[in-house]
Image (cartoon, rainbow, N blue to C red):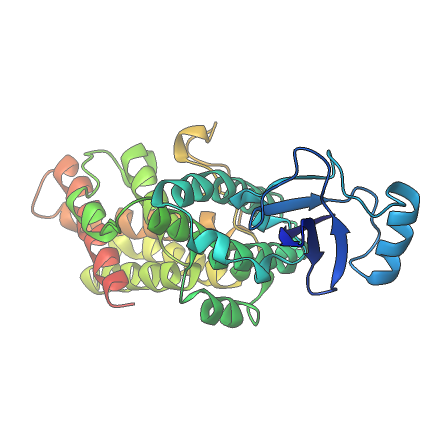
Length: 331
């Protein structure tokens, strides 16, 4: 168990007080830490952050009450992620340099993202509350002002929605802390899929939708997929050749709304071993990708009435991708 504390000094006696318990340890062994130094107090084997547990721990390990190394060291930003009293020491983060805070965000935020993606991929939904608590702590350290409201809203969501939204939020918080905000939608709008094969055979289409899903909360992604399917339905009205593809797009959109997993886009697309991806109707990501792909097939079939097949494939993907961007801009 780890506490944070600031060295105090009075009449030559240096000590630390473990707030909010008010438990004191002397720190006078040489070289003793200077007054005002922030220390990470590491108490291995402590069973609870209570006075009774601390009394028992001190009797077993430090009966004199003199804290010695290796039970303390100078505190680092990363200690705020594990200290039991971190909320009393957030000024440590506010005093950090921009580079120090960015390094913390990349390191601890990266670890948190990896764990979130792992839980999403494996379907371990019971991990959502603990990961939400860690995300809240990470956001507080990074100074993300809108995090408490977002996390309060997410607490009411289904665990799949919560984990997916947490992944998106943490990725955004890392970016905000490490670099100036970028207009990701503008970048995606300038890099619409540019492929002349059928959408289901196009890795460019697959990668583009991964990038969109990565930056969009799941509720917003659902709106984008819905808008894409509706546009394809309108454009293909009366075209018998597109009927089956539209019907399948609508069926997969319905599956996306009910799916309780999010695995397909948990990792970058180049790490997906099989392409096209294996069928997984219980995965919201797979259902989203399949819905928009069938919508693109339908639109391409309709466009072939006045252009060649390759141009129809390319134009269908780009028209639907642009519709998704437009929807997210207004989400």
